Every structure is written in C-alpha cells, then in structure tokens.
Image (cartoon, rainbow, N blue to C red; front, side):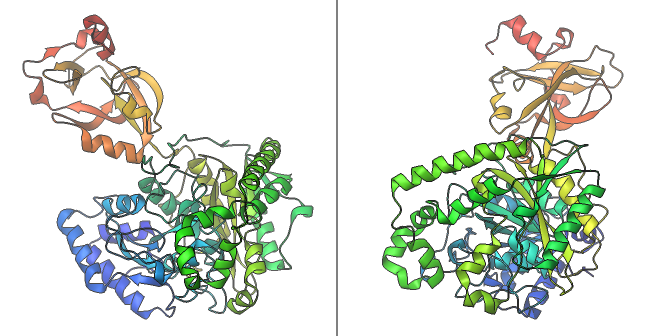
Length: 602
C-alpha cells in the first residue's frame, strides 16, 4: 500500500519490500484516472506505454533500487522536451514532436525514472498563476476555487496530489517556487546554469532555470544531483563551483517593516512571522535587511528590457500566429516590440548598479528568508484582473535569477482558511547544497505535512545534514593526479582537490603495459607491509562520477580504497590478473615519483 504522497524514501522502502515498478505504475494509473482536476496534464503517457516502460526497466535492471531513481514516476512541464511526446508550451499551434529528450529528462530516465506525462503551464511560461492556458487552469489541491500558481502549474499539482514523486518545472520569475507554496511542496530553484536547459523552450534564455517540485528537500536535492552537470550544448550551462554557508552563527536576513507587503493577507504574513521564529529557534541570528535594491532588480524583469527576451524566443511564431496566443501572454510579449538596444544596455547597467547595492546587504546576511508569495487569489479574481494580480505574486521571487542566486522554497504552514503559505531561503550562486539543511529544518519544523496530506510525517530517513556538499569523493592515483594528462577530467566538470595523502600500507603499484598515456595498476594485498602510496582525494559531481565509472577501461575499475587514516573512499583499482608480468613500482612511493624517474611527459 503506497502512501498518499509518493516521496522517495517511502517508495524505495516499498520497492525493497517487494513492490515492483509495475505495481507502482498501476497505482499511478488508477490515481490519474480518479483525479478530479482535468487540467493537470496536456499529454499524459498512455496507460499501456507506462506499463511497458515499467516492464522494460525491470528487465534491464531487475534488482530493486539498483538505479538512483529506479521506478520513480515523474512528470515534465510541457515546455521541456521528452522524446515521443509532443511539446506545446500550452499553445496547440506551436506543437512539435522532439526526436530526443532534453538533457535533464535524458539523465533522469537513465537513472531509472519513469515519465508519466507532460504537464500544463501558463502559455510560454509567461505567468505566475496557472490560468493562462487553453488546456484549462489547474487548481490548488486544497481548494479548487483557488489558483495552483504558475507557470509550472500542472507539475506542482501532479506531485501535491500524489500522482508522481517529483516533477520538472521551469523558473524565470518564480514559476518553480510560487506553485510549490500554493500546494504545500518543496521547490528547488537551482543556481542558473546548474541544470542544463538544452531541450527547454526559453522564456528569458539568459536567466531561465529548470526546477524540481518534490515532497521533501531531501528528495529535491537527490533528484537535482542526478539532473545537474555541465552541458556544452547549452550556451548558459555552468560548471558547479560549490559555495559554503556557516554551519553555526548563520545570519538570516528578513524583511523590515518598510518592505513588508502582503496586500492585506494577514494569514500569509503571520505564516512568515512564524517561519522567522522557527529559524531563530534553530539557532540562526535574525537580521533585518534592506530589500529595496532586490525589489528594484525584480521590477526589471517585466518593466525593463528583459521582456524582449520573451519576444526573442517566439518572434517568428508570433509574426504568423498572433491569434493563437493567450491574450494576456500576447500583450506581455508584444510589449517588447518597442524596446531598443539602448534600453537593453541601460537596463543591464541598472541591474549591475543594483547588484552592487545588494552586495552590501550580503555583508550583513548569509541567507535571505522571504515569503514565497505574499498572497494568493481565486481563479475568478485572477481572470478578472490578470496582470496586476499576477504581478503581485512575484514581489519576492522576480529578482532571484537576475541576481544569480540559488533558492529553495518550503512549506510554512496553513492559514485559518485552510490554504498553505510558503517561504524561500535564498543565497548567492552555488550555495545550492549549503542551503538544503536549513530548508529541510524549516520544512520539518513547520509540521505542515507533504502536498495534499497535511498530516504526513516527513520521513526520518531523509534528513539533509550539514557537510553534504553534493559532491562525490574519489581517490586518484595516476594520470588524474594534479598536473597529469587526465587531470582535466576532474577540473573541467568543476571537481576540486580535497587533499594529498597516502594509502594504507597493504597496497602495491604497477605500471600497466600498453597503456597511453601510461596508467598505474593499484591493488590491495592483505598482509603486505609497505609505506603506503601517494594519492589525491578529489570531489566531483555525481554526474561526473558516473561518467568516470562508465568510461573506465578494463582492467581498471572503481572500488573502496583504504587511506592511511583508516577512511575508505571510492577510487581507481586494478584487477589482479592484469599485473602479471607488469613492472612493480611500489618502492617509488607513487605514480608521480615514477613519472619523474622515467621523465615521462606530464
């Protein structure tokens, strides 16, 4: 029996106990058929194709949980390509059928996840409310009279209603965070460029992010780690450069009275105040900060020249198909037609001026804690006043990508009317992993459940702990050492050296014959009493580590290497048969000494 919310921990435990991916998919099919919201999906994957996908996974990877996302159902916002399914961006006339998955979808599927459908959105990802689609308006899972939030509307409702474990959204102005707040979910908004946008229809190409909706912070982080990694086919993709935050003495910036604006919503304001007190109880120092420069930067996204990026994304299609656009979306995009190159440069100059002002605020606060959205609205109210009300929803979200920040939105509890509110923790670029423990602690302390299940307990098996920087340690012994010919395989994807050290005494080192560049063979021989061998410990992304494992040629492989301090870390080892007749160089103390001794080019 699966729980209402299909979080990763519960699903993996069920699989370990004998449930199969086919069983899980049958449950998803039944729940999808019973759903009372007809606007969630634009293109659901047909039932028989879902069953076939589950059976194919079980055939190629029969062991339970043998892949990182083995049998995990997920949904994809319909401005992100998935092979075999149409991409519409919520505009039927724009529809095309991609031959390949987007980079992120391909990585998730390779990890064992099963796509259940393409979800609804505000057309061309233009909106924060979820009503701007010819396929209907998905609704809040708590009250069908209220908006789901957008633009990633269907994605949020899919997870919150228990149809999928996670879903992909996109976020330019808050589309991966506002729907999370309105549906009691976690919204992972990565540093821009951390997840590749290859195969995603751009809204504002220079600041767009693919995002993740999940039941818990732990789930969202785990999925992000599978999906992230540099992609040379995306001009805006970036190599990760993980940044830390203080573990103790964390300073959290909160709104001053002058910058508080909830548009009369006292319940959301009260939820924000409670979140501040929870942060204080966790040991943080609460610091009021000046939100004004952040707010001014936020205004540039729609009031400044960045709206021209939305026109650039669909200019050719708009010229021939203006009547096919949602009227509000068309009005926003056509508003860019009068923008000039001079305005674009002036907007960029103004953004940099504001960035400099925000630097002073980051000197006083390590993290910002803001309301995700200041209020919410009914669908009827939104349709009656679509521009003004939508603009209010982005008051605390629009600046985040423009100012190159990482953010995680988490639930903050429920108001007296039964609707949820949310808060978002925000910090400078590449603090994605460093933010996660705080976000997780705030979510747990809110006691708001997960998605539609307000009573659900966040699994104890999935806490996010400090020190988890999202990188995988690996021991290298030969051509991957600093300065050696293959070291670029570590540095290019953003790897960083942790330390130089030695192995335990019972390791021997050989020169493998007929390898170019020359490669070492490291083996462990219990009982051998040597001096240990020089090695380096590096940390790389999970995606880069996976590439290592896939590309290692026999007779080399990955196994646990014991270091001189007794710790065990995955590293390069050699099959014992390969050292027959090979030259032993153990007495030299390491590969670098051998290279120097042989005058082999580095």
